[in-house]
Image (cartoon, rainbow, N blue to C red):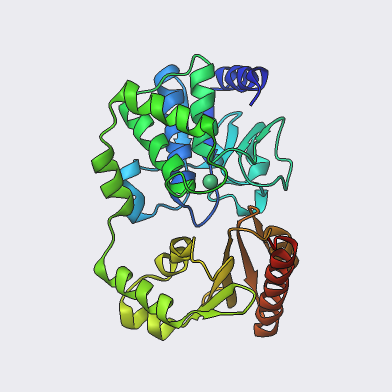
Length: 322
Ligand SMILES: [Mn+2]
């Protein structure tokens, strides 16, 4: 990312006294870690500024730090920094129209223009990687807990440096971070990866029951009664989609669950070959090339999404035959 753009962000941050940092609804570790690390770095660099990281808290990510509550109407001339989010309508806890200016820092494919400065780097492993680069290349400060949060965000979003967005630069930045702050990786990994036995058992259920087409498309519907029977929470269940990479017979795979409250199907899609976000975008969805999601009202549309994904797998196999 260009240094002039980082300098411009630094200058803009310097100019505001009230800063709110927001990310997407249904946050993952990268979303929360990037907003907390950025908030704490701005506070450390500019102790007189009021800086808030907002959005609905998730108890299992509490180890990353605490979030703030704000009353937007009482903030004078606030700056909004949106991290890890491409679309304004999925911002958690803020109304973009209340802000004097907006900075976006993201690594998803571009969707909405939000403000005067936008860093969108699809080649970055995570929002945390971009923020780490920003801190390193400006006069912004860091301490152990900021470094630890950034490490967690990068590790989680790159799936432990497995996903194709992991670059030599990712390794370089992380290596410097570990050395400089003597990160206690063992504790950080425990926080990020420890999970209950019930989840492990449910993952085995998925492995046993997933359907796989001859084109290498794997799919399963996670029924509510089964999720309950195994005692896992619905979001942990759908996040297990990340654990089915590198299965020889599968090149793209999807989990679908029904959200009773929203009255819609939530589909999580992953791939290690075919590009899937284009297809997901036809079904009220989107995301990264190899990690996407969709929210669908009707069962028939889920079926036709799966048909399209299966076709894409077929095309991919044809194009990549040795
Ligand atoms: Mn992210």
